[in-house]
Image 1 (cartoon, rainbow, N blue to C red):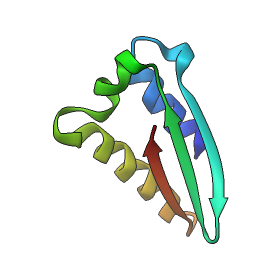
Image 2 (cartoon, rainbow, N blue to C red):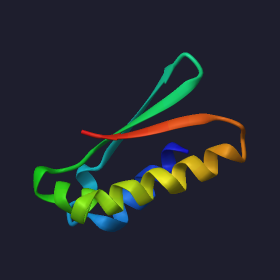
Image 3 (cartoon, one colour):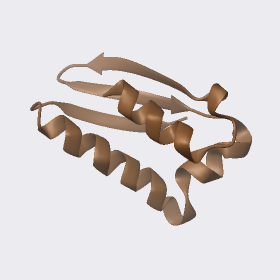
Length: 75
């Protein structure tokens, strides 16, 4: 799951070497924290948050196959 977030983010940004994804487990959910370069933040979020919402949707869809709860936070 972490690799999925990382692959999607690296495809969107201009500085893929600065993409960092960390996973933490909180109760029954896994939280993925996505960090990118400041100049790439707009590319990951998108207009009105559409790209960020799409990333979250894809990750949640992949997680439901494994009956897991996930959240993606862009920091």
